[in-house]
Structure formats: structure tokens, C-alpha cells
Image (cartoon, rainbow, N blue to C red; front, side):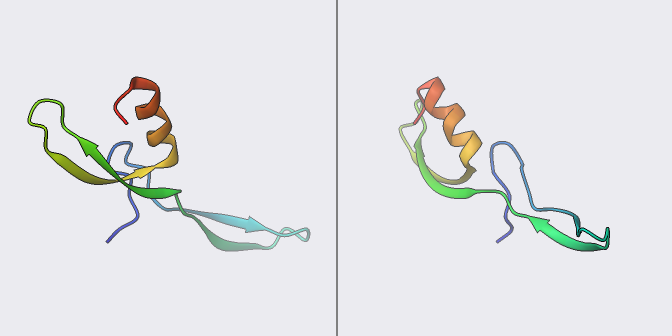
Amino acid sequence: MSRVCQLTWKKTSTWNNVSHSVRRTKRKFIPNLFWRNIKDPLTWLIVRVRLSSNAIRTLKKQGVL
């Protein structure tokens, strides 16, 4: 399964790691993902989604989680 947040669509990005001598090597930035169960308020079904920590904070502020 790919590392993608199902709400914000954050995914793994690749940038350069720059050393003191300015040599560049590839590195990965992996999003901080968690599995969470969310209850749909209309149908009362529980859906298991993979969310980033930023999306979880946003849903907690809105009162969904």
C-alpha cells in the first residue's frame, strides 16, 4: 500500500540531502501516517482510513474524531 494520506493527499516526496561540502544525495520525506476509524454521521458506518497527523489534528478541531 502506498504512503498517502486519504484526506490531504500528502505523499512521500524526494529532495536532496546536502552535506557540508555541498554534495547532494537523494533522500525521502515520508509523511507521518496513522490508521484511524471514522464514523460517518449520515449512515453510521465506521470507515478505516489512513490519515496524516496534520489531518487528524484538523478533524479533532472540527469535532469529527
